[in-house]
Length: 411
Image (tube, rainbow, N blue to C red):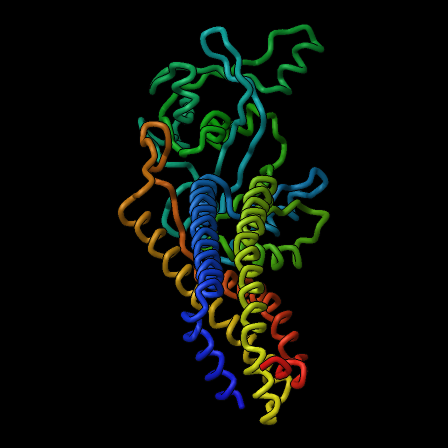
């Protein structure tokens, strides 16, 4: 019976050329679904592109896992945690102790609050530090007695700083003690040995890197480290590794954060914007689906005689319902396939030919970023089919409830 239902549904679609008005409404439905699908694919691909770009930048700057030791944790426990982390070398790319704290940077009689950071690598499979790519100058030499620092490009430009310039750093703890004791706060002089570029203005303006030992002294730390930063071979497995660490260390020893936790609000907003855009653009498909409902309703009225003949020949009501539902689904599939192809072509053209370029002097990219994901195509197709299924059900149900005698009365 399924082949019979599909055959009749297909015949009805082909025969619509005899009914111009119904054909126009059907074409409007197909065009609406096509445009809605294409718009959804393009919009979600652009959101994916920006999200991937943001993740690429942040994952380059931020640790994939950050362990912050609590003040109550003992030195023995810290060494035990580090031993556990170092035993997971198959999953980690780099493990570093760190000291981190807010200080004041003094230059040209101006003071600027920054975050001072010192890193000590415990393990690195490629001998690469957590510091970002240097644009000018050289890296910090931990064996040198000279105090050197690495600053970001935005901080350098804003304060007219270049390599070999001197900066002065005052810790907030030292400043508080000097105020309470009416004394001059301890000031540490550093030479700028390098300038890094992270493609993140906030990061460049905020973080200044110095040697691990100098950071310990200036921040006044008495412990072995403030915590551990871990970079993974696959950042997407951060939560799995965090579960392993928590099973051994416990919640009271340290706060363990993934790369998503470090910028939770930003990633939440990106996900929320994507969902909202999906829902809004889905309305276009919903409108096209209701047009399809109107088209099928008029087809049911036009085909009353056929429905009555089918019923008189013994065709069951559920088969009549399936005929018109299949007709709606076939029309929907035409729109879904056409929209998917159109959306893919637009995204492909943007990726390869940069249809929408951006000013390279103002942005870190030269064109609107686009990232195609097949799961988006699948989700869009499923939601679209669900909407058209609902829209097709009402006229199909009405067709199955038609009375034979009433339908043939005026024929």
